[in-house]
Image 1 (tube, rainbow, N blue to C red):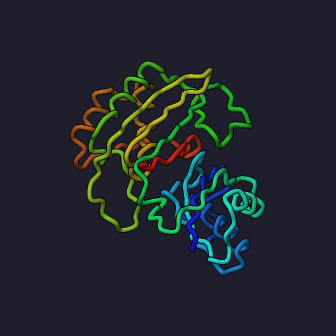
Image 2: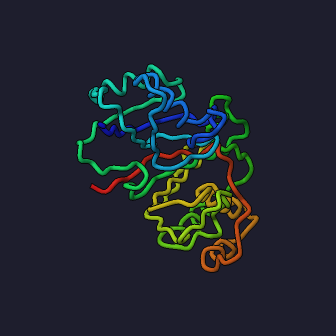
Image 3: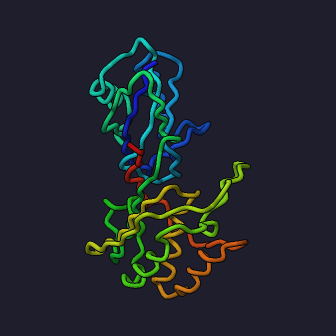
Amino acid sequence: MPRIRITVTYDGRPFSGWQSQPSGNTVQDVLEAALARICKVARVPAQGSGRTDTGVHALGQVAHFDAPPTYRMDAAAWVRALNIHLPPTVRVVEATVLPEDTDFHARFSAGGKTYRYEIDRGPVLSPFRAGLAWHHPHGIDGDTFRAAAALFAGEHDFAAFAANRHDGKTLATTVRTISAITVNENGETLGLTVSGNGFLYKMVRLLVGSITRCAEGRESLGWLRDLLDAPAGRTSQFCAPADGLYLVSVDYPP
């Protein structure tokens, strides 16, 4: 069966995340429903690079599926067909028909990801930004925000910045490497972009919430260092909302 790799962008506001749920209201559910209609079968499973939570957006989620042998369309045809059957809040922007002997897997072949988080510090949030940025109109000091963000660069044990997924699985390690973390200001928008070799459940939102706590003057940079250097039995309680989080891209080794 031909394996198709696709890049998907979506507005997370209407959906209960990426991962399929009994409600059927997830990005994976609507993607698989579109594939089933195109291929005229009961189900064509689609595997994403990883989960995004309820309300989280994606600019470059990557997924793959194995098409029935009778559906040997080219990449452009897959993009057109899928977008015809998907809701307007989900778009396939790229497709690649992989070689027959491929071992590509959207999740297991991934080498890293990049996320972006946006905070709107304006006194009034535009209705066109509702659900697309964290509205935080109270004093966030940009310099402190940058200094706090810089602490996360490199390899650390991020156990204090991970939420319990409640799926019964035990992680082999909570050590991750942040290869790049940058902060930029554009008017009232404060953005944080972070790249790494892997992210724990709600890790980016907990990083942003904790950094913001310091930038408000409510916690010190020393508090943040302690959570990184000695995380055993300690967790940050400050999780930023899903609204401002975007999965920007998924990186694959050449």
